[in-house]
Length: 365
Image (cartoon, rainbow, N blue to C red; front, side):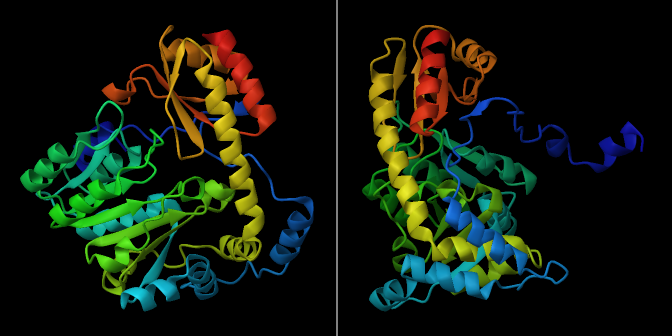
């Protein structure tokens, strides 16, 4: 196909995009993607393999993943929340949170009413807005990464977005927004507000009840950060009236049989995953304290499984390249947003991994 035909057929805003880049981590200590560094304990690994051996891979999976949804309902105590609120709630499963974000954006796509989020934010909010042809309005956070609530509410009134994303804790800053600010945004919005709780496992914050008590709120979660990133399973909780519309855009059999079986098994042994996340929270505290002792860094407190640091000596890009050359891959955020000037994002690993990362970081500054 000639380049001329491509230019004629592919939307210009798509041609202007760059594909989401995942760097090659071969041979490197990978601390750039907020993955749980722990595998399942040996006994559970064997049981999981036994469960997978029973899977009929020649058959399509349960299209509604009913057994998995039932386990998630139990885990999140949805029946209790329904009784307390008097509001029915449902679950929609996605191939990672990314697919859910895309489904929601496709359902609400409007060339005049766009998508809004505090910035810096998860990059896919803005990317998917471009995918579906919606304007994207990023509203800058304060220098301490809190929401400038007056500015944000004014922007909501001015732009009247169809969709607002609020990540709690926020990625890439790691902080939790004030509940009062979140509720003020919900009240100001004439559109849908998505509370993105991807890092729920590492914070005391839990905003699930907001989707029961507000008719314009849904809550998005994932199993990726608790140690199941390879399964690519995200889920959305909200009122059936919303989820039934979103389900029309969900591709058939989007949750494959191996993911369903693996997730069902994991939820039967969820305590083991919780123990790992608690250990990572303890490691996060130790890592933060160590980073505070390094003069050339300004670390920010985090309620996620990563820590944002600002390099106050060398440019972040130079530090990043030096660390990579020494075998440690972290995330360089230089250029992503003005508030992230000279910032790196460090995923919390095991104690041994964190010690290695710190050694390389010190030598790279």
